[in-house]
Image 1 (tube, rainbow, N blue to C red):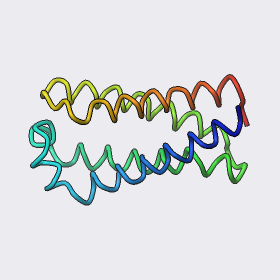
Image 2 (tube, rainbow, N blue to C red):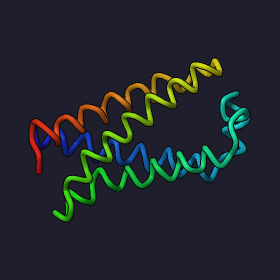
Image 3 (cartoon, rainbow, N blue to C red):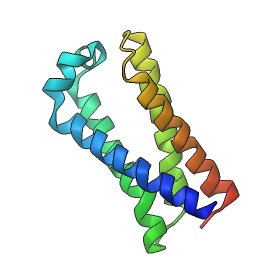
Length: 122
């Protein structure tokens, strides 16, 4: 179980860091693709991107360094909540393309949080 959780944590960290930095650096491209990005201010999307980058780091670094390992399931839980909120926003603005990606990320984050809180804590 520990190996599975580590694989999921590293994969989710990669996707979060990549997605979060993309939200921050390529905002103009996101505006062209998604109505929700056009409707909600850039500051919101930049904050979401920063949250994703920080949570992505929080998925791996605390457990790898053994410094405050409780931050790993907390970061995963924050990502699960963030994914649910983003899915709701995308659905509200009829942007259906990102919903499966966000939903899978949210489910994976919720499993990581459950796994690190209950199944195999550090």
